[in-house]
Amino acid sequence: MQQASKNKAGPAKNIVIAGGGFFGLYLAEQLALKGCQVTIFEKSQQLMSRASYVNQARVHNGYHYPRSILTALRSRLSFPRFVNEFRDCIDDDFAKYYLVAGSLSKVTGDQFLRFCQRIGAECDEAPASVKRLMNPALIDSVFTTREYAFDSHKLRDLMIERLSAANVRIVTDATVEKVRQYGDGLEVFTSISGQPETVYADHVFNCTYSRINYLLDGSGLALIPLRHEMTEMCLVDVPDEFKKMGLTLMCGPFFSVMPFPSAQLHSFSHVRYTPHNQWSDVASKSYEDPHIKYDQSPRQSAWGHMLRDAQRYVPGLSECQYQRSIWEVKTILPRSDSDDSRPILFRANHGLRGLHCVMGGKIDNIYDALHEIERLIELN
Ligand SMILES: Cc1cc2nc3c(=O)[nH]c(=O)nc-3n(C[C@H](O)[C@H](O)[C@H](O)COP(=O)(O)OP(=O)(O)OC[C@H]3O[C@@H](n4cnc5c(N)ncnc54)[C@H](O)[C@@H]3O)c2cc1C
Image 1 (cartoon, rainbow, N blue to C red):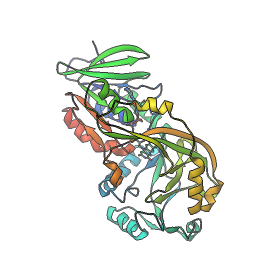
Image 2: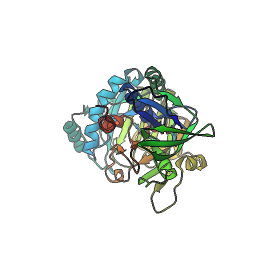
Image 3: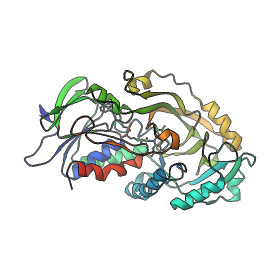
Image 4: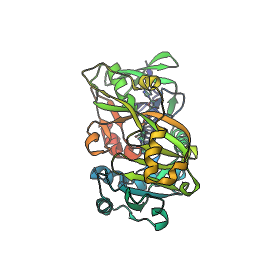
């Protein structure tokens, strides 16, 4: 059996990362910088082509989570760290407004303002020039906030450079199918361009997002309860007055429109219409591969519904020009359903010593697990 990467004499740990999204890449680099020999196996031909590309590109700064103070505070801590670390991938050249609806909202304007004060997030009454864009009959309050967007393509290119500098081995078109205990470590069964290959690792990190349970199912291990939604993110050209602007209507069945830097367009999502079909991974029924569900899902855009609803609140949005939709399976921890929280899922030694599952509901969640991971593999 091969080592996942050629192990020099000495105690360097051999690490396999399943999944070349942002989580897998970031973790790979951090572990390599601590002296580990790291190999990433990515199923697609390209890194960061799944959820790490198909998302709203919002660098969260807490505003989104008035119902989960813990997620809001974690976002506040991660925001400056992420923005500083990835400065060249950040678009901060737009104004971000949070709107609160007069009815159907789960928070009032006063509650939202108090919540922002509590978490220390900038939040001021928006200028009249912005308020006049809103329908006063439906919008209760408009706040100027500070929130940015990230360019996923720039982030990918930067991570590829950093991984090369850290000597991380990257294998694309490579699926990790199964993991089995082997002595003190793990035997890792992969399929590389359709050819089976088995490697050895001291630790395997399962960073496969919607497919965390694919590897567990293949290895005969207990599934982690997860809920999946087939989601549609519309990419649109907004009218000139909205070009340097992002809008999020809180907090309930509403919408967001904000810059999507990697396509030089705005993303448009709607709480009611972005999710299409949904399903759950539960132990009591046979496992369904989310990537197969994704391939087989009908892609009938809900753009018309999104726009019809949004333009009631912000009439000028009716002039948005729809360009295309991007689709992805969004994976959510069941407990997030009630409070809309986004904690990181981190399961150390899940079913096998050395097999660890990591999944975040936000791109910057990775910071929440780093310290634990370093401790786990005795790097400190
Ligand atoms: C619609 C939507 C909107 C979102 N909006 C935001 C937002 O605005 N801001 C934010 O911070 N977060 C947002 N998120 C969440 C964010 O996208 C995720 O937290 C993050 O991208 C997860 O990164 P990842 O590396 O775990 O997943 P991914 O980028 O999906 O990477 C997992 C990789 O694993 C690969 N893989 C799967 N199975 C295997 C296998 N067996 N072997 C090898 N490789 C495998 C996949 O091909 C994939 O490349 C959003 C997510 C979605 C879906």
